[in-house]
Image (cartoon, rainbow, N blue to C red; front, top):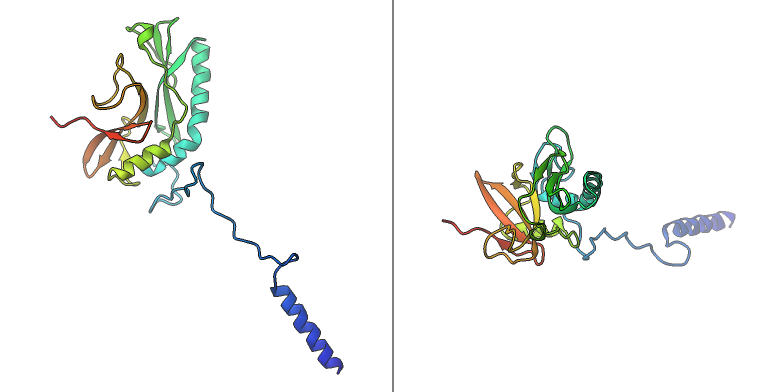
Amino acid sequence: MAGGILLVAVLALLIGCGGPPAGGTTPSPTPSAVDPKGQAPANVAGNEGRVPCADGRLLIGDLPEVDRQWQAGLESATRKSLVWQPDARLISLRVGCQLFEPGFRWQATFYSARAQAFLASDTGETEPAEVPPERVSTLPTEGISFGMLRRSLLKSGFSDDDEISPSSGVELRLNTEAMPFGPPAAPLDVVLYYVAVDRLGETKDVFVSGADGTVYRFAAP
Protein backbone atom coordinates (compact mmCIF):
# COMPACT_ATOMS: atom_id res chain seq x y z
CA MET A 1 0.00 0.00 0.00
CA ALA A 2 2.83 2.38 0.87
CA GLY A 3 4.41 1.63 -2.52
CA GLY A 4 1.15 2.55 -4.28
CA ILE A 5 0.93 5.88 -2.48
CA LEU A 6 4.54 6.64 -3.39
CA LEU A 7 3.88 5.87 -7.08
CA VAL A 8 0.85 8.19 -7.14
CA ALA A 9 2.90 10.98 -5.54
CA VAL A 10 5.70 10.64 -8.12
CA LEU A 11 3.20 10.72 -11.01
CA ALA A 12 1.55 13.82 -9.59
CA LEU A 13 4.95 15.53 -9.32
CA LEU A 14 5.86 14.71 -12.92
CA ILE A 15 2.51 15.95 -14.23
CA GLY A 16 2.90 19.18 -12.24
CA CYS A 17 6.37 19.83 -13.75
CA GLY A 18 5.08 19.53 -17.32
CA GLY A 19 1.93 21.61 -16.87
CA PRO A 20 1.33 25.34 -17.18
CA PRO A 21 2.87 27.77 -14.69
CA ALA A 22 1.01 29.24 -11.76
CA GLY A 23 -2.07 31.10 -12.90
CA GLY A 24 -3.02 28.41 -15.41
CA THR A 25 -1.76 30.20 -18.55
CA THR A 26 0.83 29.11 -21.05
CA PRO A 27 3.39 31.81 -21.93
CA SER A 28 2.93 33.10 -25.47
CA PRO A 29 5.89 33.29 -27.85
CA THR A 30 7.79 36.57 -27.93
CA PRO A 31 6.62 38.59 -30.95
CA SER A 32 9.23 39.51 -33.56
CA ALA A 33 10.38 43.10 -33.69
CA VAL A 34 8.53 45.41 -36.08
CA ASP A 35 9.34 48.78 -37.55
CA PRO A 36 7.26 51.90 -36.73
CA LYS A 37 4.90 51.12 -39.63
CA GLY A 38 4.18 47.65 -38.29
CA GLN A 39 6.26 45.80 -40.86
CA ALA A 40 8.64 43.02 -39.92
CA PRO A 41 12.30 44.02 -40.23
CA ALA A 42 13.72 43.13 -43.60
CA ASN A 43 16.20 40.29 -43.83
CA VAL A 44 18.67 40.60 -46.65
CA ALA A 45 18.49 37.36 -48.60
CA GLY A 46 21.86 35.67 -48.68
CA ASN A 47 23.47 38.46 -46.65
CA GLU A 48 22.53 37.57 -43.07
CA GLY A 49 25.31 38.53 -40.72
CA ARG A 50 26.74 40.99 -43.25
CA VAL A 51 28.32 44.15 -41.84
CA PRO A 52 27.51 47.06 -44.19
CA CYS A 53 30.61 48.63 -45.75
CA ALA A 54 32.93 46.06 -44.13
CA ASP A 55 34.01 45.11 -47.66
CA GLY A 56 33.90 48.71 -48.90
CA ARG A 57 30.58 48.15 -50.69
CA LEU A 58 27.18 49.69 -50.00
CA LEU A 59 24.38 47.37 -51.10
CA ILE A 60 20.68 48.14 -51.42
CA GLY A 61 20.12 45.63 -48.63
CA ASP A 62 22.31 47.78 -46.33
CA LEU A 63 19.92 50.76 -46.44
CA PRO A 64 17.88 49.79 -43.35
CA GLU A 65 21.10 50.01 -41.32
CA VAL A 66 21.64 53.55 -42.65
CA ASP A 67 18.24 54.40 -41.12
CA ARG A 68 19.57 53.39 -37.70
CA GLN A 69 22.66 55.60 -37.95
CA TRP A 70 22.04 58.65 -40.13
CA GLN A 71 20.74 60.92 -37.37
CA ALA A 72 23.89 60.49 -35.28
CA GLY A 73 26.04 61.00 -38.38
CA LEU A 74 24.19 64.19 -39.28
CA GLU A 75 24.38 65.54 -35.73
CA SER A 76 28.15 65.17 -35.81
CA ALA A 77 28.35 66.94 -39.17
CA THR A 78 26.07 69.75 -37.94
CA ARG A 79 28.30 70.42 -34.94
CA LYS A 80 31.25 70.90 -37.29
CA SER A 81 29.26 73.28 -39.48
CA LEU A 82 28.22 75.49 -36.54
CA VAL A 83 31.85 75.82 -35.49
CA TRP A 84 32.53 77.01 -39.04
CA GLN A 85 29.63 79.49 -39.22
CA PRO A 86 26.76 79.95 -36.73
CA ASP A 87 24.24 80.46 -39.56
CA ALA A 88 25.21 77.27 -41.41
CA ARG A 89 22.27 75.27 -42.74
CA LEU A 90 22.09 71.86 -44.35
CA ILE A 91 21.49 71.74 -48.12
CA SER A 92 22.44 68.17 -49.04
CA LEU A 93 23.36 64.84 -47.47
CA ARG A 94 25.32 62.01 -49.06
CA VAL A 95 25.94 58.59 -47.50
CA GLY A 96 28.54 56.11 -48.70
CA CYS A 97 31.23 53.84 -47.28
CA GLN A 98 34.40 54.95 -45.57
CA LEU A 99 37.43 54.71 -47.83
CA PHE A 100 39.82 52.69 -45.71
CA GLU A 101 37.76 51.34 -42.83
CA PRO A 102 34.33 49.80 -42.16
CA GLY A 103 31.39 52.08 -41.53
CA PHE A 104 29.35 54.75 -43.26
CA ARG A 105 30.75 58.03 -44.51
CA TRP A 106 28.52 61.05 -43.91
CA GLN A 107 29.07 63.81 -46.46
CA ALA A 108 26.87 66.74 -45.55
CA THR A 109 27.02 70.07 -47.36
CA PHE A 110 26.14 73.25 -45.49
CA TYR A 111 25.58 76.81 -46.68
CA SER A 112 26.33 80.07 -44.89
CA ALA A 113 24.83 83.33 -46.17
CA ARG A 114 27.17 85.20 -43.89
CA ALA A 115 30.24 83.60 -45.44
CA GLN A 116 28.65 83.24 -48.87
CA ALA A 117 30.17 79.78 -49.05
CA PHE A 118 29.50 76.04 -48.89
CA LEU A 119 31.15 73.65 -46.43
CA ALA A 120 31.79 69.93 -46.97
CA SER A 121 31.54 68.51 -43.46
CA ASP A 122 33.63 65.36 -44.04
CA THR A 123 36.68 67.17 -45.45
CA GLY A 124 36.27 70.67 -44.02
CA GLU A 125 36.72 72.16 -47.48
CA THR A 126 34.83 75.35 -48.36
CA GLU A 127 33.75 76.71 -51.72
CA PRO A 128 32.51 80.21 -52.58
CA ALA A 129 28.79 80.38 -53.31
CA GLU A 130 27.96 82.10 -56.56
CA VAL A 131 24.20 82.10 -56.05
CA PRO A 132 21.97 84.50 -54.08
CA PRO A 133 21.03 83.26 -50.59
CA GLU A 134 17.33 83.12 -51.46
CA ARG A 135 18.03 80.49 -54.12
CA VAL A 136 19.69 78.11 -51.68
CA SER A 137 17.11 75.78 -50.13
CA THR A 138 17.52 74.04 -46.79
CA LEU A 139 17.21 70.25 -46.86
CA PRO A 140 14.32 69.17 -44.60
CA THR A 141 15.18 66.11 -42.52
CA GLU A 142 11.70 65.19 -41.27
CA GLY A 143 10.56 61.93 -42.76
CA ILE A 144 13.91 60.82 -44.17
CA SER A 145 13.71 57.05 -44.66
CA PHE A 146 16.35 54.89 -46.28
CA GLY A 147 14.07 51.92 -45.69
CA MET A 148 11.52 53.59 -47.98
CA LEU A 149 14.25 54.06 -50.58
CA ARG A 150 15.10 50.36 -50.42
CA ARG A 151 11.47 49.31 -50.85
CA SER A 152 11.09 51.58 -53.88
CA LEU A 153 14.24 50.18 -55.49
CA LEU A 154 13.10 46.60 -54.90
CA LYS A 155 9.71 47.36 -56.47
CA SER A 156 11.57 48.75 -59.49
CA GLY A 157 13.29 45.44 -60.13
CA PHE A 158 16.55 45.85 -58.23
CA SER A 159 17.68 43.40 -55.55
CA ASP A 160 19.25 43.62 -52.11
CA ASP A 161 22.53 42.34 -53.58
CA ASP A 162 22.83 45.18 -56.11
CA GLU A 163 25.61 47.62 -55.28
CA ILE A 164 25.18 51.37 -55.00
CA SER A 165 28.01 53.04 -56.90
CA PRO A 166 30.74 54.17 -54.50
CA SER A 167 31.25 57.34 -56.53
CA SER A 168 27.70 58.53 -55.80
CA GLY A 169 26.50 56.81 -52.65
CA VAL A 170 22.99 57.94 -51.69
CA GLU A 171 22.45 61.67 -52.10
CA LEU A 172 19.49 63.67 -50.78
CA ARG A 173 18.55 67.14 -51.97
CA LEU A 174 15.49 69.32 -52.24
CA ASN A 175 14.39 69.64 -55.86
CA THR A 176 13.50 73.29 -56.50
CA GLU A 177 12.95 75.49 -59.51
CA ALA A 178 15.92 77.65 -58.51
CA MET A 179 18.24 74.67 -57.97
CA PRO A 180 16.90 71.63 -59.88
CA PHE A 181 17.92 68.14 -58.79
CA GLY A 182 16.58 65.26 -60.83
CA PRO A 183 14.66 64.62 -64.06
CA PRO A 184 12.19 67.22 -65.38
CA ALA A 185 9.26 64.98 -64.43
CA ALA A 186 10.25 64.91 -60.75
CA PRO A 187 8.05 67.06 -58.47
CA LEU A 188 9.34 70.39 -57.20
CA ASP A 189 9.86 71.22 -53.52
CA VAL A 190 10.23 67.54 -52.66
CA VAL A 191 13.28 65.75 -51.27
CA LEU A 192 14.75 63.41 -53.88
CA TYR A 193 17.05 60.46 -53.18
CA TYR A 194 19.62 59.82 -55.90
CA VAL A 195 21.47 56.53 -56.36
CA ALA A 196 23.52 55.05 -59.20
CA VAL A 197 23.00 51.29 -59.05
CA ASP A 198 25.58 48.94 -60.57
CA ARG A 199 23.68 46.00 -62.02
CA LEU A 200 24.70 43.41 -64.60
CA GLY A 201 27.60 45.51 -65.81
CA GLU A 202 25.50 48.67 -66.18
CA THR A 203 25.09 51.73 -63.98
CA LYS A 204 21.52 52.98 -63.71
CA ASP A 205 20.71 56.43 -62.31
CA VAL A 206 17.60 56.47 -60.19
CA PHE A 207 15.81 59.31 -58.37
CA VAL A 208 13.20 58.47 -55.73
CA SER A 209 10.64 60.88 -54.31
CA GLY A 210 10.80 61.21 -50.55
CA ALA A 211 7.09 62.07 -50.55
CA ASP A 212 5.68 58.83 -51.95
CA GLY A 213 8.56 56.63 -53.14
CA THR A 214 7.90 57.19 -56.85
CA VAL A 215 10.90 56.41 -59.06
CA TYR A 216 12.06 58.91 -61.71
CA ARG A 217 14.74 58.54 -64.38
CA PHE A 218 16.10 60.73 -67.12
CA ALA A 219 14.70 59.76 -70.51
CA ALA A 220 17.08 57.93 -72.82
CA PRO A 221 18.51 60.21 -75.53
